[in-house]
Length: 241
Image (cartoon, rainbow, N blue to C red; front, side, top):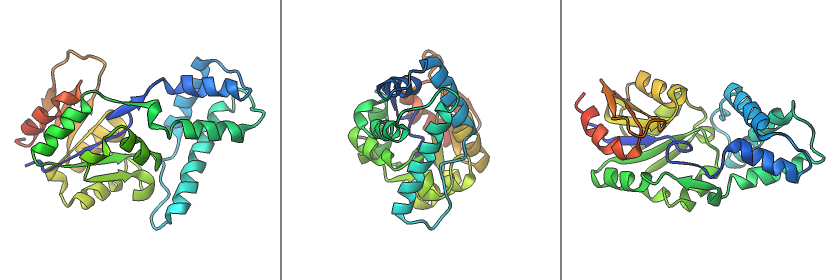
């Protein structure tokens, strides 16, 4: 029986109001570097895809984690713009960019998230988040009125491990007091969410919004869906697998 459902955050429960590459390029112009949006977006995807996980091991104090998180992002932003030009004041640009993505006003919740989460809560499930986001996630979830649905929020830096590492999932399972056989994980990344959750033994659900008309596809304890609205029904089928 599925007793807990865990969710990825950005890209699953909410998304940026404008494409990340557009935001990076738009703010860069304000700070003296004019680079094409397409080039910025492509460089960001390359850098982000090759980056080490946003995790620094266990036993660190919160103030240490906050500095390390910020430093991790500063390195990624610097690497993104390295082939595109130089800022008159990179630190000022990074401060503005980091603050921009900390503001819930610059994110938008999936319109199906709230009713879906409420239904799962009404069904008695323990709900959690497992995310490779940093501490800004807490403010974003608060601002989008999503925190109230969750019994736990596990971010990679505080867990000490980032998805797809099994330890990131194990930390969330431990906090919820459930085993992998009693839990499901829903996310939008095959590599970071779907494959590692399934390998660990959780029921794994991949959300792919490309084809909004596609019916849920279920195989064993895995499912592919195009809408968060399908999660409660899929959960009922997966717990019988």
